[in-house]
Image (cartoon, rainbow, N blue to C red; front, side, top):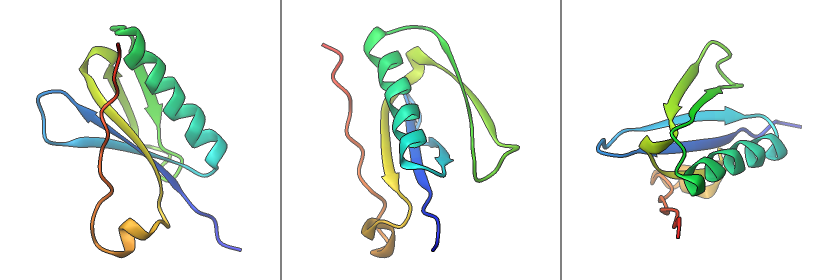
Length: 94
C-alpha cells in the first residue's frame, strides 16, 4: 500500500509563482483547503501559517489579503502523469 500526498497550491496576487504544501491524508488536505477558503471569503488580513507534511521543515506565512486562489489536488492524479499541471480556479467572494 502506497500513500498518496495531497497538494494545496496557493496563488498570490501580483506574482506568477504559487506556494504549495502537502498533506498525507485527504481529510487534512480538505481541512487546510477549507481554512484558506474561509480566509479568502472573509477578506481578512489574517496571517495564515502553514507547514508541509512531506517536508517538515518547510513553513510559510501568507497574509490573507494576498491570496488570489487555492487549489487542492492528489499528487498521484492523471494531470501529473500527462506532464501538465492542474489548472487553477479563482474563488468568488461575493
